[in-house]
Length: 175
Image (cartoon, rainbow, N blue to C red; front, top):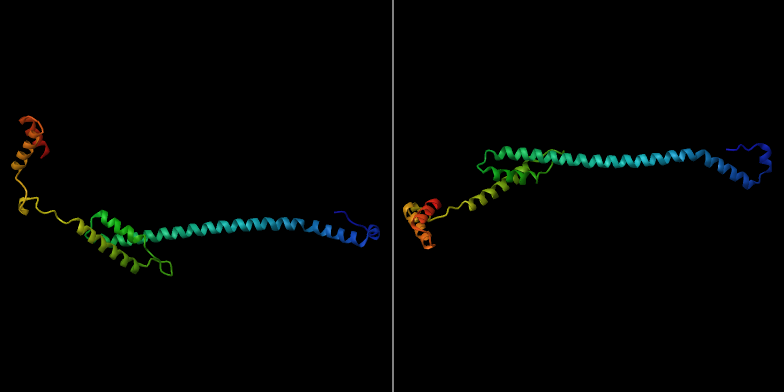
């Protein structure tokens, strides 16, 4: 900051002169260095903001793709003869496996294949779970009439020590 006049220059050694020039340059560029540091910090913060925005945008695109897939599969499954809970399961399983084409749109062909496979598996599971129990009713060759069931219950309650009236009341309530 001190200006060196010509008389002082004559009295300075070459080393002192070099040091004075270096100090002057350092002092002159100090504000530039501070500005560069602020720009670097700002640039780093901007990169972090952009990265966060990119992650959020990707999550939003994924959520939108799954929503679109869910709507697509749900529309097709409504015409299928599945109970609501089974249909919801098929829709969810299919939508969670949705993929996008190169242009970012929903790959409906691949989704339809996944949905068909999931639907077929659900139909198979429901078919095995709904096998009828045989031999319960008279039509199946088994089962007792109402009076036989009540009589049997009355006898069971009587063996447990109930009075005849108590056994009749209990048997009527159990049927």
